[in-house]
Length: 78
Image 1 (cartoon, rainbow, N blue to C red):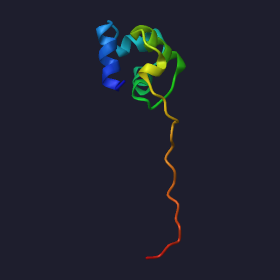
Image 2: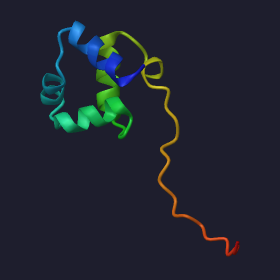
Image 3: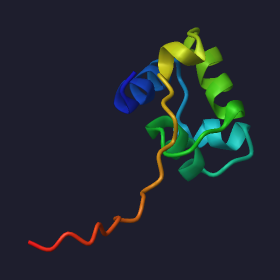
């Protein structure tokens, strides 16, 4: 699901991100990062899946977290 769809579905179920963060004793920022896929938290993912009555995989199609790699200089001179 797109992050905006997740947030909208939570609002429909009567949950705000702030309330969810407070329930899980986390910052709202952490909950937002998980929703957007910038961070992973099993606790947050499981709770959102439970609220939305969906599987975690149905909400997030997890891909490996890719870190920015430094540019490799090949030594080719044009």
